[in-house]
Image (tube, rainbow, N blue to C red; front, side, top):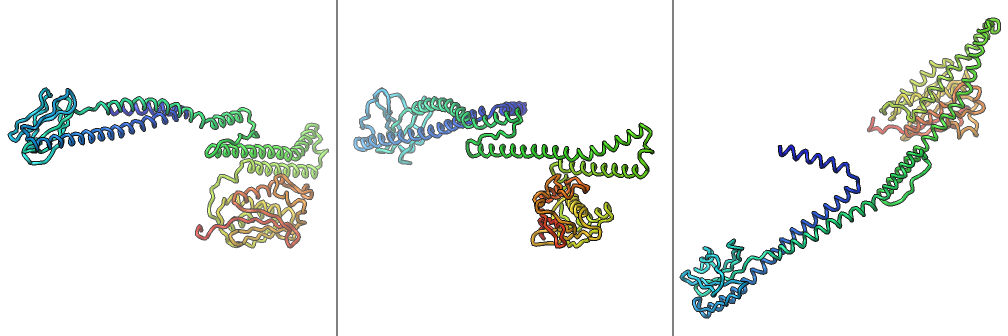
Length: 470
């Protein structure tokens, strides 16, 4: 039961401690630390003082005993004159060779001669310091002299130690109270930057104003904390800005295909309601219109998929693994051929191992091949090359199209960007942007240049896996 009660008490104390504020904890810790320090100091100082007083008293007893012994040697133990008892202070006694004792007149009786003191009187040893609990307790020093012994005793007095302890207790209480006040002040001063930081964070949470950076103040850990929060706010600003731009760009890009799709569907509905669908739209026109509707739906599906991929903020949820990039390139080329049979892809790949996400890398390679397929002439194949170059895996997609104008090169990998010459071609302007994001996520670099055939040369450099990792 006692163990269970102690456990419950400890748990309640732990819960109480956890509910307290950091200020209260620091105050309690400071007061406790000072109290423990004062207590330990008191114990050590009391022990040292008591030992010093005992040593001093013992030395005084020895000195008085030597004086009395010298007198006894000259006059004899039976005739030596014993100092009269002054009413307080030291007590003396002479032990004669026959075991009898002499004491000054009027002196209080000392404890009986101990066996050790008797052996000193008989010559077994030269001296003896002993303590007795008789009455209030005596310290008795026995010294061999003149065939017997002389004894000098004093009453053990602990009052100096007790007075010292009482003084230390008062000082300790004062220090504990002062320590609590100092701890409270230090906690208030030290936590003031935290209070201001909390107020600033609450203000940002209420106003949702991510542009209001928290003032950088203080030093050490406080400064690093403020900088970390400001970096987090900056990341949130960038994320919100990216989301807003994505939404604006998506709205802009979706407007044209949705408008065209809506007009075509409304036309079909209107003609069907009038009953003039067959007469107003010959079979050839209906076929062309339905083909346009299918193409617009396919374009919307592609755009929605790419927007979803971009809006996720990460390449994918798949894990990183060690893969042969040549297998990824071959799989992407196979998918490109199945999607557009007219595309001819010439592969020149060597085995290069990388650490990455297979599906994301295949999507990036497929987008590169699809982009090249829009521009490359039907009689000219798209050349896809993969090789190891130093510590990098280098992938190049080369087409024989008209190439990319110098003015368009800086914005090739921007989202929704389409050159003037590409306005009439299908696509959303997101393919190369996804390539850029996948490459960045893998620690690589994407670039565009003019190929030797006059078309565009898109190059991707990815870190190759170390031989030990393979």
